Each structure stands twice: as structure tokens, then as C-alpha cells.
Length: 388
Image: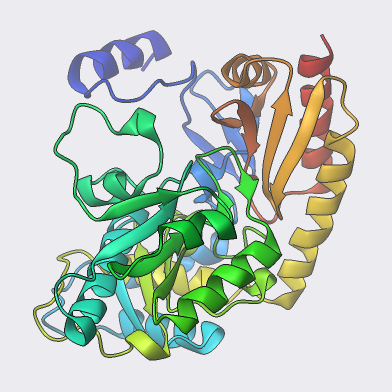
């Protein structure tokens, strides 16, 4: 099908919710993608941090196909081996006690919100339900997670939004100011992704943790985008030296299949009982089989490689003309430049480089196994585009 015909069908039959770029993606391998007309791209987007070992990964495909040949879906009324094995592996790697599986980051965050409110309701009664999130945060597009998102621009059209969320300045003082006898949890992205790839200050986060522990307020960390090796450790909270009560993740967890996870640590281990929450597709055996193949390869050697690639990219990107700032952690990188981010992304695409945007920044989320020549190509293209 010609690209022009594809666009026409898309516009006619798909809800117009995406501001798509002018290309299609048909096939590829690793960080190399091709459109229908054969144009080659180096992928620094990974499907928004999803394809963490790129596309067409052999080991991932073998795991997924093997499970497809057994059973593609089973209700959560029954046991399945891939789901139990994945939960065990997540718990052993993180110290979590229990896991709830869903289909996306928004659903994982919905689960965390419900868990925090039930924990506090059972212990303190019905008036302790508020959750503090940060200004400029993003937690999803369901009504609850959109309500939790601390961006005024997203609080339109869909009123009334869910009550019980307060938005703090992204620091310790901001969080402390909003804590009251109604507060049940503080919910943080340690690197604000959609909000512009902005890392929180480590010492401020540690202060928030101490405050939460002192007042029995749950500390919840949204690792939907930062998790699964993206920032140079399995989860970003490890680099902050804190111990959350609940951690959510999704995106790269299953390497390209829809899967979210909400991990409960000691304090919240028994917060849910039968019937408190559920999901038809959550923990689908095919998605879990894919996730197992991903998680088993997220080891110390890979994290060291991610950290090394991060230093290389931060160093070289910071030298490019018209780059004002390089922010982020690991292979989650934001470039603030003198040019509009969308304009930069479109110019890069025309030259064979896929990048993303996050507010006024160019956002880079390459596969974790990105090669040096691919990084050098990205640096070259960004240098051409930004130096013009």
C-alpha cells in the first residue's frame, strides 16, 4: 500500500488523537527501521521507551512464539506459569513482596492509587485519601491518572476530574507544604518524562522519603518510563537510595507487548484481597513470556553498558551548537535547544533519525543495546539540524 493511501485510510477511520510524523514503520532489526518505500531510520525513540532491545529481537521472539504455540490467553481465574514466574523474578530482583499485573502504565498507576487509598482507609478511616503528586508530572490518561497528572493543560474538557489529588512544587518544601491529615500517599516520577525529562534532586527525594516514613504516608514511585534498565539500573529509585512502598512500571517491561506491573513492598503486601482489583488481560501469558526474556537479560553488565553510553551521549550532545541543556538519566535524555522541539524532530526524521519530543525538549530514548555507530549517526544528524 502506498503511503498516501495509508494516510488517507488512517485519517478516515482512526480517531484523530495523534499528531503523527510523516512516515510509516514496516520492518526493521535492532535500532534500524524501514518504511514501506525502503527509507532507513535509526530509532532513538524505541516506541516511547518500549522496544528496549529494539525490534525483531531473536530471544524475545522465540519466547513469545513458544508461548503462542501453547495458549495465547487464560483468565486470571486460573494459574499460568509465565505470570507466576515473572512475578517471582520481579520480586527477587527488587525485594517486592507482591505484584499485580495490568496492561499499561496508566493501569499500573490506577492500581497504585487504589492500593494507597485502601491501605489508609483500613488503618485510619475514610478521610485520609489525598495523594500528592508533582507539578509537571504525568501519570496517564485515564480519569484517575489524568487527575493525578500535575499539568493544568491536561485538565480540560473531561470534568469533573477525580478529587483527592494535590500538586506540589517538585521539591521537598513543596511536598511538605501540602501534607495534611488527609494525605495517604506521595506519588513521584524520579525523572519527569512527558514533563520535559527532568530529574528530581536526590537529596530532596531522600527528605521526602523520611517525611513519608515518619507520618506513615506511602511513597509511590512511577517507573513506567524510567524503569527496566532505562536509567542505568533496573529501576531509577535504586540510584536515589530510597525504598518505596509501591512501584509501578510498564513500557519496556514486556519489550513491545502491553504489560503493566504494580509492585507492593512490605507495608502494602496484604493491602488487596480477593475482589479488590482485577484485569481480564493483565498478566497475559504471552506478554509475560516476553517480559521474562527481557527481565532475565537486565543485569549488571547491561546496566554498566547503559551508563557508559549515557556518559558518551551526554558529553557529545552537550557540545552541539544551540543545545542549551542536556538533562535526564541513563538513556532517557532531553535536549533543550534554541529551536522548537517538533521542528527539530521533523528535520531529524527527514535525515533518517527518529527522535521524540517532551514539551520544549527533544527526547531521546534509544534501545538499551544501541550501537556506537548508531549513536554517532544520531549525534551527527542532531549536530546538522541544530547547527543550521
